Amino acid sequence: MNLTNFVKSKSLEFGFTHVGISSAEVEEFEKEKLKSWLNKKYDASMKWIGNNFEKRVNPKLVLENTQSVISLSVNYFTDFKHESSGGKISRYAWGSDYHEVLEAKIKLLIDCIKEIDTNGEYKFYVDTGPILEKYFAQKSGIGWRGKHSNLISKNFGSWIFLATILTTTKLDSDLPSENFCGSCTACIDACPTNAIVQPYVVDSNKCISYLTIEHRGEIENEIGKKFDNWIFGCDICQDVCPWNRFETMSDVKVFSPINNQTNLNLEEITNLTQNDFSTRFKNSPIKRIKLIGIKRNAELIKKN
Image (tube, rainbow, N blue to C red):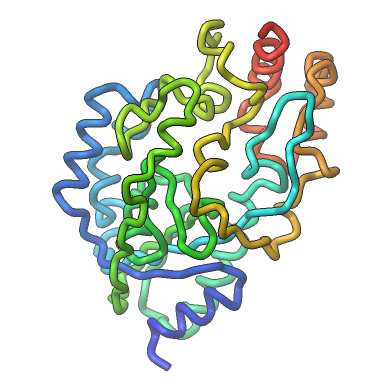
């Protein structure tokens, strides 16, 4: 078995849903697309995206002499529904923090690969580094970027987490994925804040997911009226995507809702202490927005 097939085989063994490999080069049109998005200030307060622009469009500045990019995905769909009351949590945050879950898998995977490839260097990120992970995932055939900008897989829809490994070892590349969105505009039509300003372009300033998670400070009440009870993230554009009719149950048990909760009681959140928050959300992505953020979101929902 050659190294490329070994990497793919071991990735699946360690629980990844799909693995694809591509060269490390980023095409000029992709660089220009990102530059245009930044120039229009669609990054809102996420200035780290622009600050790391050169690295983001050149993996060799992240890991010297990068030859190949390994893209990995994990299906996180679980067959639960939102409750009729309370603040709605985005599906990706129902269970344990995916960063920690995927990082543990990747460390084991890389250790295994390096037993064979003793000279190669490897560096990985799980949604945490200056890497165009969705671009490389499409380039390596895992799926395509939908008009809502999320990656869509033929087999698992958009309910997938992504991770990226850079390596100085040259591996065999896969073919890129075609785009199968066609003329569909379901995600664009469904967005209550019109955050998808044109196909494949999202203005973060209007995005409920950005506003409830990344944004610091107050949220204007006018846009808060359109939140539809989302307290952490938003899945509206994914819920309406026809490709998510092909969803498959994840076999990663820790992605199931903690205590079967898909919503948060607004009064409970309003009365949380710092100790309560730290204990309750210790293993959850929700810890990212801190106590002040979750209380702000709860108050906004109660007001509207």
